[in-house]
Length: 314
Length: 257
Image (cartoon, rainbow over all chains, first blue to last red; front, side, top):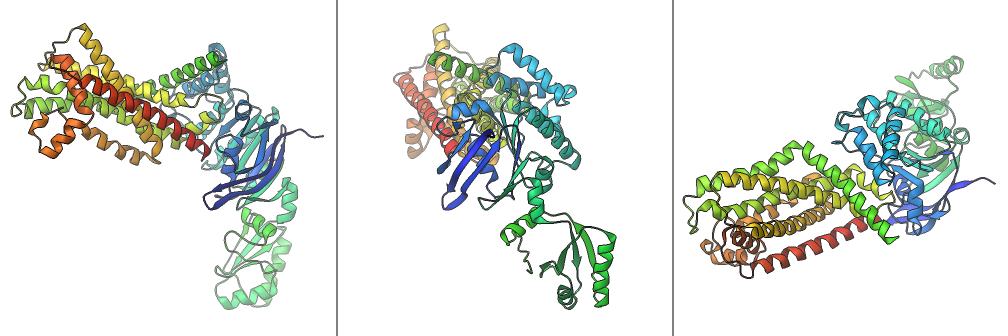
């Protein structure tokens, strides 16, 4: 039997008339990385806030380490740490002071606080900036400090709410590296993200969320088999050539933009064949480019409905 | 068990107070504003208007109590902005997800703000002494001044925590504090209330700042205090209790929303 550290059953959360979470159920295995993948407004943060004991669900149950997040919230708080969407660091304090403050609030003794601060600063490559105010830190450094803070009391479960939103590509890669390292230590990581690639890179299990519901759960391989391969987007000049092209090639059609997206394995051979077909019919696209599968494709494949109004032709 | 909970609640409050004090020292603009503005107002009133205002005493003596409470108002109002910033910045969320008493953060702001109040008030009194303020208070009266000002400042600080919890952005937090800051002007702080039009006079006589100022005046200069001390304690003791309760409720409400 597997060890479920988080188990969520039928969670519903309503704000006024708006049902933000519509009966969410899932499990997270101890020591794994779990990603909640969805667009802005899908309800990811609301789910995290319920698990982190910040808000209460209207119905359903959520348990962490066997404790109910509502009725046994104090026990839950001792197991978890939360790193929110915006780095919750104190700008006017130094990195060191930020860590020490949280250490003291974790009710650790003076010596432990000191030793752990030094250890975390080193571990997160912040020793050099330890005595500088956080207001002078870069975005990546703030995030690192934020995560260092959340690790202070050795939590069993770490919530990372969109840990790389707003980071430049290099800082994002570094953050991924960091998250993998944490997972290797046996910490359970619950992360939310808008990026398919991020979930793909990190997560052992991914739950895709849309409009307050989980529409698919699986490993990244399982999801990829649903959403298919890379796509080639062809843009046409006028309605006539667009209509003509949509008859001879198969793909997702976007009427308003006059774009057809065709699945491709990316070989030059398949490209040549595609362009030849168009050429033989005297249609020339005005532009073409490759596009990796996006979250939108996931929704498209799973629900048959896109969030951005792209319609499928089959 | 209860004892150790109380102990940790106090320790957490102290940790957050230390943070607030560091903020005060490092946010030089805020501190300069909290000290500089009341000093400037005092000098302006004494030097510019003082000659024209008849209060029956040396105007500097008349005006110091009013300047002290205006000063406290400026200092406290910064708390609303800090509280709002902590909520927006995510620190509230982080602390709430930790197993500690939720009021510790608010306590940090209140006590930290009190330290700023104390620094600013001391500077104002020192400058007042330099420009001719001649208090007649003895040790007991000074202790009374400290006591009543502590009550006033703590109640005002809790009130501004409430303001900070109520609003959703820093600009509103700033704006919401203005009415409070003008209250001293419509009291006996700068001019005797008898000189005001009758409707304003009625308001000025019955608003909480007037008994507070009359109490301070009585303690510092030996003018009659009468019921003003008890009125002040009732007003600001009441404000302290109500603000504390409302702040706690608001804090919990945000938690379960």
